[in-house]
Amino acid sequence: MRRLSLTTTSFASLSARPTASETQPEDDGSPATPQRIRIEDGDKKVANRRIKDVEISVPVVHGTIAFYLGRKASESQSHKWTVYVRGVTNEDLGAVIKRVVFQLHPSFNNPTRVVESPPFELSECGWGEFEIVITIVFHSDVCDKQLDLYHHLKLYPEDETGPQSTKKPVVVESYNEIVFPDPSESFFTRVQNHPAVIVPRLPAGFNLPTPVPIENLKERERGDTKDHPLSHWFLNFSEADELLKLAAARQQVQAHIIKLRRQLNVIDGLPQSSITASAYDL
Image 1: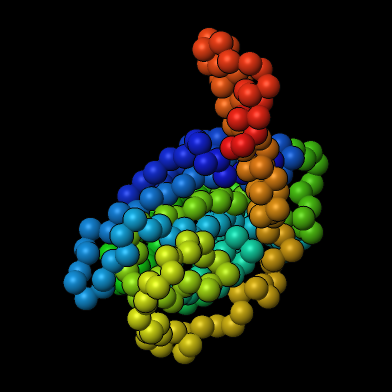
Image 2 (image 1 turned 135 degrees about the vertical axis):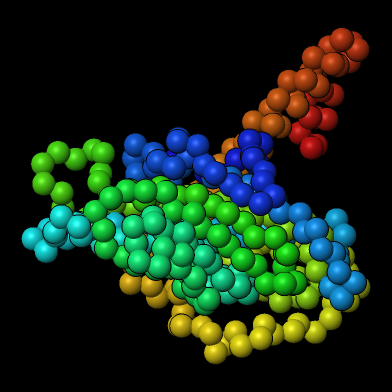
């Protein structure tokens, strides 16, 4: 299973269109290669004071789940599917995202669907596969730019022969880390204890204003998105697995540093004992 790579990342300011390899899951059903999307906010208003040299990261998953209708299927409606934007472990993203717009195929009635509150998703029935444009609109103190994601709706599994199962859905998901540099103080304060948001620790003595609640946020919520009825089908982007891979990468870097120091010290004529000791002091 491939996870987020800190050394091989791609950045976008307004849109992120995945390549063919990124839209398909791995052979073992794992999610495809993620992206790290950096969004520069062009509207740095005085009303929203900025915290310099700080980045807030929001891991986000978007995808589709499609069920074959079996005996209930017709020529025009063979599958029921859901497209969504969610937190990595299905947390509520309403503190960051204001609305999500799903642009469906023109053959659908009202193909532009706007979801104003979490869970950010919609369900439909149909027979064909097509690309869905997912536009994420953030709250005004988060970013003045919207983010466009592109997702291919997949209805049919590639690794099965014979009749399609009505019990096992086709799941395609993509993981992205959205990065907000120099966040506003109000945004930082609101999400600093949010389980879905990665927030750095500020220096001691740094005073932040009292968090301002988002207007009508509680009125717009439709329940806890952690209790989603489809959650057992969501792909697992394990934090523990990510930490293990980061630890392994750190060990590789340390081993490479040791090798380079040995080579440099051999050139300088230093004894081997001092090389090993200094290398493990990192």
